[in-house]
Amino acid sequence: MAVSVLIYEDNTLLRESISSMLRLDPRFVVAAAFENVLHAETQIAELHPDIILMDIDMPGRNGIEAVIRIRATGSKIPILMLTVFDDTQHVFDALRAGASGYLLKKHLSTKLFESIDEVLNGGAPMSPTIAFMVIAAMQKPSANPYHLTTRENEILTSLSKGNSYKLMAAEFAITVDTVRAHIKKIYEKLHVHSQTEAVSKAIRERLV
Image (cartoon, rainbow, N blue to C red; front, side, top):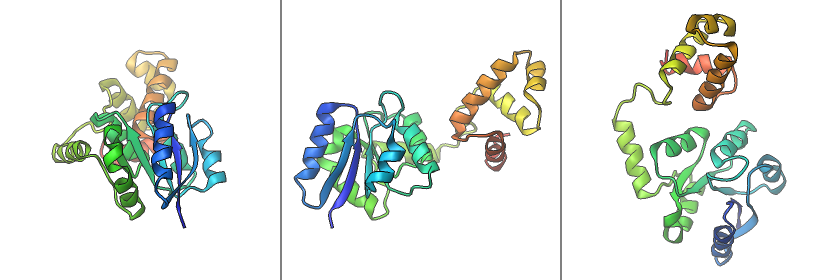
């Protein structure tokens, strides 16, 4: 049975190019190709693809946010990120979100089929430069892996002590709305959705 591939890519020319590449190989069938991920959860539930090819920079919602939402539904479908971004932040954000692999678009013509095969066999393919970056980052200890600012660290520490928004506002001489803004940013960086998750992760990973 052919492998069903679902594509999310906002560049029309590239989206059609990837679809054409896959259709030339009888091992694959393109379930669908969309220009955004605004309805990804519903589309995935309806189409039941074997693998998802996911761009990062898309309008309305980016690919990393989409991966987080997809994983939140309990879906284990392999997701291979296809992107032009080769910076550490995007790579680790994607992997933490639940991406199965990370392939630079400049390597699509030579690495796409190989990467899909690797993902479907339980591997985690990465472009050579990305793999090197991940190894280098792992070998270099980081005291701030989520790139929290000094104030965000202070807020997270206070949050872990069970302090209220009002108390934190008084403690740091800022407004309650500013506290909320900081906490929203902390949630985004830690990839969590609640105070309980944030505090649990902070304690488990010794961030506070």
